[in-house]
Amino acid sequence: MANTSLPVEHVGDGLRTARAPRAPRALLLAQGSNSIGDGAFYVTSALYFTEIVGLSAARVGAGLAVAWAVGSIAGVPLGALADRRGPRGTSALLALVTALAVASFPLVGSFPAFLAAATLYASAQTGLAAARQALLAGLVAPAARTAVLARLQAVLNAGLAVGAALGGIALHAGTRGAYLTVLALDALGFLLCALLLARLPAPAPAATGPVPESRRSGWGADVLRDRPYVLLTLLNAVMLLRMPVLSLALPLWITQRTAAPGWTVSALFVLNTVAVTLFQVRAARSVTGTDTAVRAVRGAGAVMGAACAVFAVTALPGLGAGPAVLVLVLGSVLLVAAETRHSAGSWQLGLGLAPADRVGAYQGFYGAGVPVARTLGPLVVTTLLVGGGPAGWLLLGGVFAAAATATGPAARRAARPALRPAPVPAR
Image 1 (cartoon, rainbow, N blue to C red):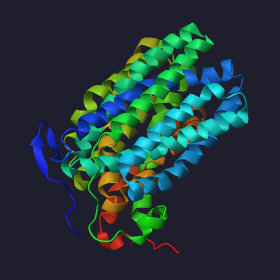
Image 2 (image 1 turned 45 degrees about the vertical axis):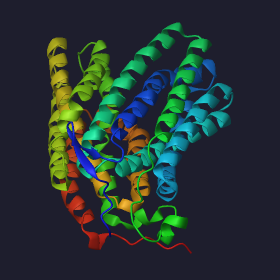
Image 3 (image 1 turned 90 degrees about the horizontal axis):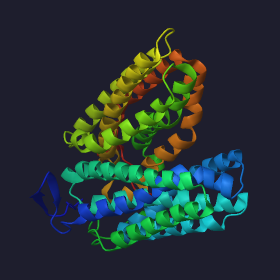
Image 4 (image 1 turned 180 degrees about the vertical axis):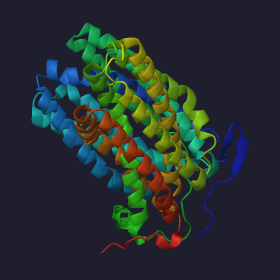
């Protein structure tokens, strides 16, 4: 296969494409534009649908679980669409569809309508993530991708924090108008994102010569035949169980199993958000290839295991409120260190080990770990931790360490060309 990398030049903290020297900046602006609205939406959506629309909490939870399950499946064909039709146009289109999905929420008045709108939202979001990755792969040189992704993550966290603060204002007001303002902000954010992505240059084709038949009429199903990559994706999904640990398990654990005051929950969330925003780029600097990515993930698994052991200590009898808070802060610092290292290694492996002409489909599959962690993760972590107590923390820490250790062999197998499946011709 011909070398498909675009010409590169040294700029700032890494390499970037000479053809699209401003691509990283535009991608950052696009990320920031929709993350602020999303932050406001995330903190207000549950109360909007229960208090304003009138749905029960159980129906809202079930609808979101179904929506994200469908979205995780839709990511592969939507990513394949980016491979076939071009990631720039596809990502802009999916950002526009996401904006339309958000704009449809004020029209929701029943559970079926909510389920339809939420499914469209989740599917478009998942497909957008895959198409964006394919767009980044086409516009940013391989040596700079992890650094750019780290900056995108930092912008995402900062945007979510700003959006959450705006959402807090809407929650304080508690009126229908306040909630509708949040929805309008989120829809406008995705509309601006679509405009910014559409203005980027089209990436060069990933391969020269005739377009493979699988790219003309296939929908990315060949990723399921790539067993090393499938295994890598499953291991990454296990590592992503760290997400409900912060958002769900720790709040329940703190209030039910420790002497720490309730405000500790919000304090730890702020600590995590600020720390990831400040240190994600630094954590990604040493990740430049498969070997360094494997080391980052393996180290992250070990640190996650240590964080789980620290959290288990907070349930010891006689541990007062002050010491409990200090131990929880220590565990949260370890969790941040693990999160930033795992993110950097995961980005490099997921993007770097995807075939150049099928990045969208592969990223659609790899990215399914996020909605899976969002839907199944709460059940897993609450069963282990709230039900199992300190032993559950130790077991979860062992699972993290085992998954991280297994990532190395899986990544090395996925990097061997002889083990990669050929594109499946359409029938």
